[in-house]
Image: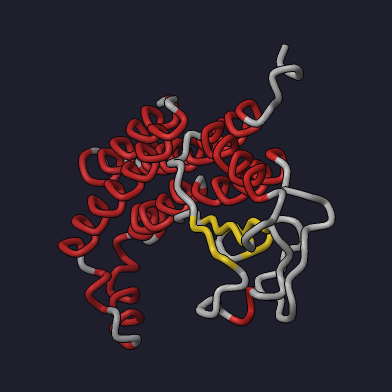
Length: 231
């Protein structure tokens, strides 16, 4: 998920420079590129739904960080509270960054479903399962020739998600655990036909994703602590 920042202002606003500095400092603390858009509210080409916001206003992904509004028609005025604070900007940046952390967790879902799918049916049930899926137009899913490559593909997607998130926080425990889980899932089903190994590895992969979310959340909290609050 990309983070888009817009600074709404009008010429002569006494707080616009302060708002720029706050945006810059907040982005620096989050390790994000120092990039944002600046929109003159009084410019004739500015969209009408932005003209009612006071100056300066900071929008993150199209939403005002102070009011939560995405549009405000009317005539602009000076921001009564002055420039949005660094903490306000950081809080919304953290919220948007936390959503990214879900990528690794969501990526594990298809892999675990595909891995467990053939294990929950005994061989004697395969004809009935094939008939059921066939009646739904999904008969090809009952084929091991389809399930095996799908398992590999989704396991690789899950591992990519864990690796991507691990590089963001520079901690790789969840990726290592997830790799062990992915290997165990494949080995348990296709090498050793062991339900215990398969299900245990599924739990390991899911656990790695949950652990990644926990350490990412802790990392974000630590980054956003003021220097005086740190032990």
